[in-house]
Every structure is written in structure tokens, then in C-alpha cells.
Image 1 (tube, rainbow, N blue to C red):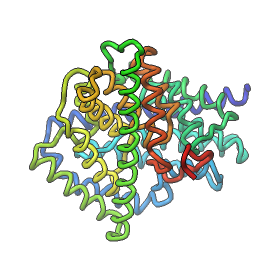
Image 2: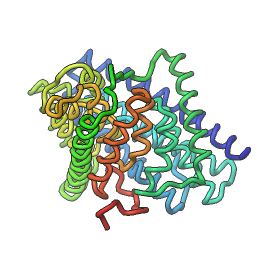
Image 3: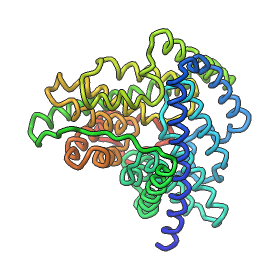
Amino acid sequence: MAKWLLLALAVGLLAGSASAFFLFGLEWATATRIAHRWLIALLPLAGCAVGWLYLRFGSAVEAGNNLLIDEIHDPKKVIPLRMAPLVLGGTVVSHLFGASVGREGTAVQMGGALADQLTHVFRLHHEDRRIVLMAGISAGFASVFGTPLAGAIFGLEVLAIGRLRYDALLACLVAAVAGDQVCLLWNAVLGIHHTHYAIAAVPALALWPLLAVAIAGALFGLVGKLFADCTHALSGWMKRRVPYGPLRPLLGGSVVAAAALVFGADRYIGLGIPTIQAAFAAPLAPWDFAGKMVFTIASLGSGFKGGEVTPLFYIGATLGNALAPLLHVPFALLAGVGFVAVFAGAANTPIASTLMAVELFGAEVGVYAAVGCVLAYLFSGHTGIYRAQRIGQAKPGKS
């Protein structure tokens, strides 16, 4: 226990510090793009430049989150440290010029890459290295979203569908809590903060709200599956048609930038935090979730760096907002459940997603969030945003 407490604290310190500076960079990039909208026109060139850097220096780490998951399943060699600065810089550039990407992937990759450097320092064996990598994933996720419980379970749950590794529970929990606290300390110094979301009132448990959330949960899972399948399909198609890596974000960035500038679709680029917050308060355009899906699939599928999770939060919250009047439940409730459930379906992480809802919105939403996340998980099939994720236990009705 003493060994893992010390190692996990070290992982939390590294990942939490990296996430804090990453959040600072994201805030600067978003504010700069909003103040200078013409930067969106340079998105193709920015994507091409990042693509060239990865081609020249980052071919060994381009697999990103999937590389971390593969190394946990089959340890081979230590993750190169350059993964951290490359994904940090690539994601900040993506947001500065208007790509529709998230931040979870970056924080997780930084946490995993930094944690894996402890393998050299302490000469860790394969089994210990697996746990350190899982702790790095947990610390990165927890610190970037301010959700230590969800982060701890995410590092255990994301590796294989239907199976958790309890041997890493202590390390992941300590790393997640430490990473979150370190990030909060740095945030106070840097003058930034995590985004606050609120559900004004959660209805008492009753038959219809539960049934409505279950129906919506099934739809959330199908949308998560559609997002993952389309992103993988576009990425594969681009790689077959455009073998030279830097050209892929050049082409994809041209489409995204043109659509944003010509149609005034700025609400579908970047993180989209204002739209997510608005989904909890009032009716939005019913096609907002589809718009965000298209822009995010185009950005990630063409090679821009960043994560999938915050766009999935946007898709889920706005889809929940659109479904709420049809199912006769409050906007805020279904926006909150959609926020976590689409992610649960796309990432196959229903337990972590439920805990995230409790940490972000309060314990009152816990049962509704669990129903939505479990149904989304069941209806999303065995596909997901992480290709390296394995099947530990097939879902009911699947083989």
C-alpha cells in the first residue's frame, strides 16, 4: 500500500499539473478565437502544420488513447514522453483555429505518458506498469473535468467492455483524487475554474420520468454508436484516400472552416460550453446535436487532435433538450442525463458516467442518470470511440 500510495500521488501530481496548464491554454485559445474570428479561416493550415509535426516527430504516439489501452493490455515499451507536449500543443492549436474537438483525450494522454516515465525511474515490471498507466488515465480524466470518482472508475472501466480490474483500484482512486486537488490548486493560481453545470430541480422518482429517461437512454446509446461508427469510418476513408498525413486535416479543416464561416455555425466549433449550459435552461434548436456531430466527426475523422468527450457532452445535452418536451420531462433533467449517457454509450463506461453525473449535478439525479447510462450502454453495441477497447464480457444479446 505504501508503494502504491507514493506512486499514485506522484502520478496525480504530474497529471494534475499538466491538466491545469492545459485548461489555461484552452481558455486562452477559445477567448482568442472568439475575439479574432478570422482565425477560423486558418484552420486548414494549422491542421496541416500539426499533421506534419506528428508525421515528423510523433508517429510512435499518434494512436493516442488507443496506444495507452494497448500498452495496458500488452506491455511492450514505455510511452515516449513527447506524447504529452505534442497532444497538448496540437489540441490548443485545434481550439485556437476552430476545430470541433474536446479535451479528455489530451488530458488522458498527458496523464498516461507522464505516468509511464515512472517506469524508468523505479524500474517497474510489466504488471506494475499496467497499474501506473491506468492511474495516469484516471488522474488525467479526473483533473480535467473535476470529477475524481468518475476519473478513478474510468481508468478501470475503459479498458474492456464488461470487466473491471480491481487490482488497480487503490492506485486509480488515489491518483484521481490527487490529480483533481493538484489541478484545483493550480487553477487558483492561474485564475481558471472548471465549468459549472446545474439541474434546477430533479423530479421525485416516479414511473413516467423513469420510463422517459429509459426511452431517451436507448436513443442516447444509438447516437453514441452512430458517432463512434461515423468517426471511425471517416478516419479510415481519409487514410485510404489521402495517404499523406498532413493533407488530411488540411482538407477536413477546409470543410469545417468554410461551413463555420459561410453558415455562421460558430456554435458547433470548439468546446461549445455556452451551448451546453444553455441546454439546461431553455429550449434550443432541435438540430443542434446533429450539427455538433457533423462538425466533430469531420474534425476528428480528418486528424485534428483533441478528445471526443466534451463534444459528446454537447451532443447529449442538446439531444436531451430536444427530447424533453416530447417525453414531458424537464429540460434540465434530460439535458443532464443526455450529457453523461451519450458518453456512456460511446465509451462503454456506464459506471464512470453515472458517477460523473452525481459529481456534477448532485446525488438527486443519481437514479435517473444510472437508468439513462445503463440503457445507453446496452443499446450502443460493442463499438465505441476507443478501438483498442476489448470485450471482457459480451453485452446481453451480443456475442
